[in-house]
Every structure is written in C-alpha cells, then in structure tokens.
Length: 483
Image 1 (cartoon, rainbow, N blue to C red):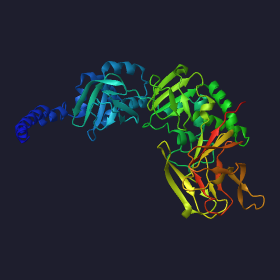
Image 2 (image 1 turned 180 degrees about the horizontal axis):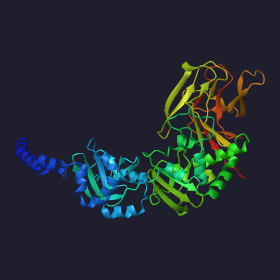
Image 3 (image 1 turned 90 degrees about the vertical axis):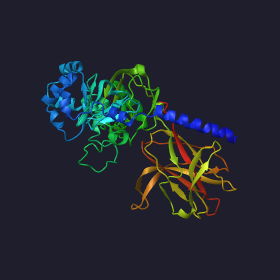
Image 4 (image 1 turned 90 degrees about the horizontal axis):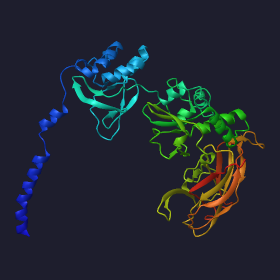
C-alpha cells in the first residue's frame, strides 16, 4: 500500500498542474474583457458617435434631459434603434412632459452591464418607473449592442422603445368611470370602518382602506394582477353578496362594505400575463380565485403588473366563505390575572406536525375566562369546532365557549359599566384525554357583519384539575345562505 501511494503522488500533482493551466485564464485577459468598450470619453460623446443612437439623441437634447448627463453621476442609457425610435415618435404626443418622461424611462442611475442570467434585476428609471432587466432583455426589449462604456456611464442599443406604462393606481384613475375603480377611488374620502389612521400630510391616500389593507397599487416596486368586472357584473356580484354583509341594517353602509368585499379579492400581489396565469390564485384574504382565461376579454400591461378585464364573474360566493381561526395561544385577555398558571406550549400531533396551544392549570379561579377576538365576520350561520389537547392530566375536564358581540353597551344595572351582549353560549363540553381530533360544538347565527368576541370559560369550581382550560384553536365555518 505504501509503494502504491508513492507512485500516485507525482501523478496526482501533474494532473493538478494541468487542470490549473486549462481552468485558469490570465487575469489581465479577464480585466480586458470586463472593460471592453471602456474609454475616457464622456458618455454623451460616445452616444453622439453611435450611428444607431442618432434619433434618440435628437429627442434627448430637444427634451433637455441631456443636461442630466453632466458627468457628475454615472448613468446607464438604453437606446432604441433608430427605426424603433422613428416609429415611436410618430405616435408620441407633442408635449414636453410626455417627451421628457419618455426619454427618462430609458435612463437608469449607475452602471448596469448586460444581465444574461435568469435572475431579475429591477431597475428604477429616471421616470420613476421600475423595469425588469433579465435574460438579455429589459422590459421585453432585446439587446443588439451592449456594455458600451464611457467615462461617466454606459449605454446599450435595444430593439424596442421603453414607453412608460401606467401604474395600476394610474390606470384606476384613468378608468374612474368604471364602477369597480370608482369605488376604490372613493375610499380616498370615505372610510368604511372607524379605523382611520391619523392623517399624514405626506400621504393623502393613507386612509384609503384598499391601499392600506389590500395592496398599495401606487408602488412601482411591487407586482400586481388585478381583475376588473364590467359594471353590470360588478353590480350583480355586490347584490349577491349583500346578505353576508348586513351592517346594523344600514343599507348604504352594507352596500359599501359589499363592494369592498368584492374588490379585495380581485387583487393579487404577483404579476401574471394572460398566458402565464395559473389555474388558481389565492387572494390576500386567503380566498381561492379560479382563473378562467376564456372570461378575459382584454389584458393591459402596466408598469407594476397586469389588468385583466372579465366579461363575466368567475369567483363563486362559496369561495369567499372561508373559515376563521382563533388561535388559543393568542388571547385578547383574561377575566383574572393567572400569569403564573398560564402555559404556552409546543406540541406535536400524531402526523408529526408541531402546533402551539395554551393551557391554564391549577389557577384556583372558578369560571375563569380567556377572551379572544376575531376579524370581521360575515352575517351568516357558523359551525364551530375546537381542538383542545388534554395530555397532562389523568382526568377528563369540561370547558365551554360563549360568543359575544364585539361592541360594548352600557349595563342596564349600572350605566357606567360597559358589557358585551351575548350572541350564543355553547354547553359545557368534555375535553377527553389525549385526543387530537376536532370537536364539533354546534352552530350559531351572526346577524350583523362584525367582529365577535369568543370566550373560553372553565368549569364553575376552584378544584385543581377540574377547572383547567386548554385550546389549540377555534374554527368558525360559515354556511352558504340558501336564498
């Protein structure tokens, strides 16, 4: 074995030397390639010498944008070929602002070499728009000449113009005559709920609930897909959903909430062209949106996404009726302080899945309550389930769930004391030992679209082990109305 080792040693060394000679290139050659096209000439002078840049340079100078390229900062200019510039100029409005924005949409701060990888680089142009730079293309325009560098920047010749597109917010404003867009814009002035934040003079639209809660479609650095219904279909969808958003029997408020409940599930935070749309999308509120491409009558590409116009509704009401979960380990409060007896646990179910729960044990309080709150829930009937793991006691104990209104009212006995009206209280239910199964508690009807306050209550005893409370989650399953 030792003799074989001595024979192989020089052979391995020779192979390594050969590999190094083949695999490693001269660092000066690498340096030369990195600086290909680099001169000490200013970027503007280099562009003036580029024959395919002549049409773009005319507009650059007549628009006054050339003054930005003054050598004080580095820029990358994406120059459309002359033929594409001539075609674009024929349809470009003859007003200074439009032409300045057009030119600025071809210029990015700093230097950006050709990106031939599959990784998308998002470039912010001087126009304020953000363009995708990926796979030897920028915003879909290919490169016919690349990486031409001057002393203060770089330019590429591209095969198409980079006309500034509207953002989704600009699109909505430009199509404000459509009911769906008009409603979203109305939220600039009208608040659906009494949850408005403090007015910010820097952001007039801060209280628009669609922008704040669903997606800030003004943002050029995010991607969106937005489906829009024609007026008659939008009106029909709202009318169909009104029974689920009864708000204190107030018709105007209920109708406004109904509109919001429709539009909030028409926006998705990824950009999909019609060809690339998946069969199913998931909205920000976890509503499954089935995609029927045959229902799309028009698609509009935006600077931050896509708009798809639907010629019919594709989202069934039942899809919007999603379950509401209340996590046991996330209480809103307790009827009494029992911190020393409260345990937030991590458990593993028989399928190997970890979960968190809460257990309050040996606390010495009769009818102890853990109070929770939910997001706004639809006005319909709910089936209610819990999962509660009794795995550390040898006995079975009981607990119950009560459903109370979220809004408080003055007590009839003492007007200075506020109380919550009871909606429904389920009977005490056994928490069996070592059961990981959901337990069905029953159903209750929620007459008003609103939040609710579920309360988990222990047995009316101070005996340790008999007044334990434990909860992984409560699940509220909304039922579809039959008429």
